[in-house]
Image 1 (cartoon, rainbow, N blue to C red):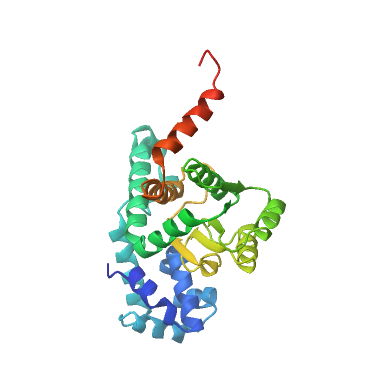
Image 2: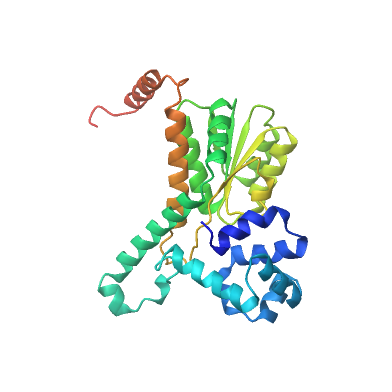
Length: 286
């Protein structure tokens, strides 16, 4: 892909400090960038207006106005539904089934976006690290905590020593007990959850590998030894259906499938153990 978002990701490592501030703003809140004036955007990014002009030329567009046009075109190409707000639907549209259709299209768009951004090398590195890990601890809070919990469960079912840590106090303890040969899987949709950031820092200090599933160019992404980028637009409203968790489940499913298919895994023996364990927990009537 050669859209503006892909070009930013490609040149990001070599950008100067001010340029990275602009890139971070575009990737984190493209809608604000499109709405704002050059003064608004410069103030939000903490740079000068001339810096925005120079950044535009780095991306091979003439100026700020042309940069906004490139961003709008890239967003439109991602999906005509992806950034259409469910909150904007009126009662007639909802009664006519528009909500169900739009939500489905947003889910499909989030999966397509995740597939497009998926880094094969990072995926292979993640599979190898998890497969060879002595111990695995997954960290996440709120909705990301639910995803971290499922990740641990999926890995546990493959015979790996995986545990989800929910409580923030226990996160500090669990991450401090990790060491060389262990893997900390840190999950945060925003990339800013302080409890998860602290766990990643502690795991690093103890010599564990840190695998992060989060949005690119966020504080958590910068702490990753292995980064699986998941960047999905999410409307922030308690009544709006979520789409981001579908993207995370897709990546988790890929990890579990490839680990489960690895030659070293005794799948039949493991399956028998799991079935036996489940059978012991079932009542005679079930």
